[in-house]
Image (cartoon, rainbow, N blue to C red; front, top):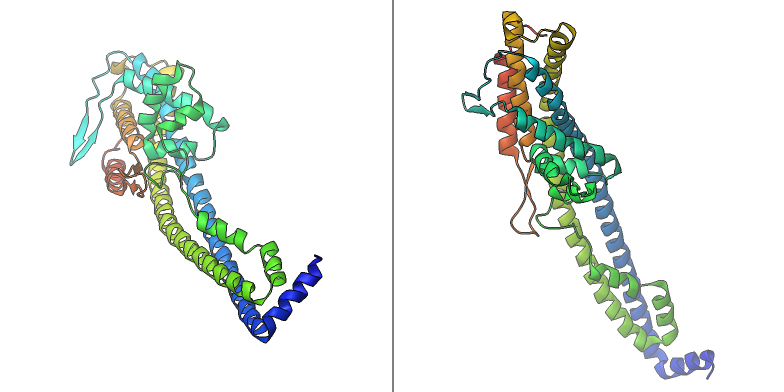
Length: 346
């Protein structure tokens, strides 16, 4: 039977009551549609907000991770220069006022430097967030682990598994972030334009039932969108805190690196250009400068060793920003820069 006759027959049966029911059903449909649009808007805004925070945090973490790896790579040059100096004293472990720095060990520094070189060399072909993942897990530790497996032909993408490879992945303990869900997707399908058109054709009573079901789906979708918004707010709060902590840590790292690079260039000039390779030929100022350089190497080694993120035991829980240890190391660095570097190097 042609469709117009079906519509006409349903209209006669429904009568005036059907018209009233249809109007109520239409209102429910409109309300459901409005609710779904609100849910979709809330969902999209939440996801866009998450993307923005993730992008900013990823950039900051990547900058920090690359800087840490570059510093570790430079330790090979430092080690080569130190090893040329004959009769040099043993550079012992630094420990003062709760500040403990590792003892100078040339083998350890060269191993870390080589591993950092492996990671740094592969970052250009890796996904955004890889370098930041190494900072999150501790660049020094990541470099040592990378060196241990580099000879097996492991790719940089696999090596990045040592750490969280993305600032968002660094949020959750065990896996990728998931926002939204089946409820929202299902609601969007149910309230598609085609479904709405079919409902208008069927007639008042059935249309009213459909409208009620769609209202339930729209309500479910909006509830899901609210959950997404709540979860995103929690995660963006974490990302904002992580970014702030990383920027503060990087600021101190840059200052320590600046002092380190000055003295490294001076030592290079003395050993290579001036060919001073006997400790007895060093002036008191030059000896002190060299000792401070070793001290700064220990400080940088420790700073690059700090894990910015501590992984949660539960994969669904948010990780912890290692703020306490970061603050301790920042305090140690400032104390050393202000009170220990008395070698008149500006």
